Image 1: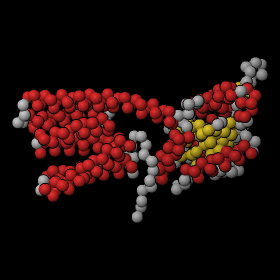
Image 2: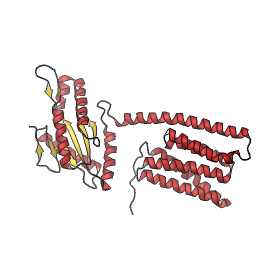
Image 3: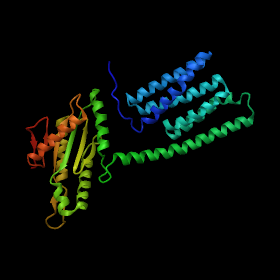
Image 4: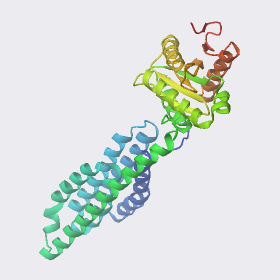
Length: 340
């Protein structure tokens, strides 16, 4: 029997998972109660909603289809509320409030607002039946306030979430991805590769003799060199590739949809681009040239993230040992590319 390996949820995965779990915990007991009291139609509706919530959690956790799962979760929540009102009458109108709020956790603000308005229009005939105009006005006003506050909250939290992602996944000095972003990217591409999709190559980049830069010219110049290198790498990789600063003077490139030979050509292009950089006094000497060593490792099916990282690191160490400013691959230990 195959078990799903437990993992941490991302920020995008948390809302649909938590809301679906709340739906299971909240509606499940109600379904059992209504079944006991003989309200079979509503009990069946509740059980369908619970099953839908469980399938949504699986869609997020196993398939990582957050957008699709969020849309499904929103539809289950609002459709269940509308049907409940239609079947049980106006007393069930209270379920429209949590369903409406849930929309703004799951959909974009405009999508959620449109969905909420359409749902309200569908239940209006039931709401009007047997109620005074004042009662209907109170309901519409309170639900309108709920929608307005939900829109404001959704816009604010969306902005804050994006800012938080930038902070938590970006190296503040160079603008490249940080180690957390690297780990998340590796987990994603490894999962895709294990499912039979395109493979990838991990390229480790380490600046040569970087300590001399800091010791001789100061950390301000050293920081400038790191930023220049990050820009050079990002300017020479493909849109599908990703650049990260793993720490210190070490960068990592994930060459997506690549084999080792293609990645070697990319790494050589990066090596040449970095070698065009310089630091130090801008006098007749032109300063000192920046160079870097590269270690490459192509992903093998079933390999762990740490195992792949170690192979690339071993290849990088070998490139350093053989003289720096060159490429080396642990898959092809005898092949070395040196500077012209």
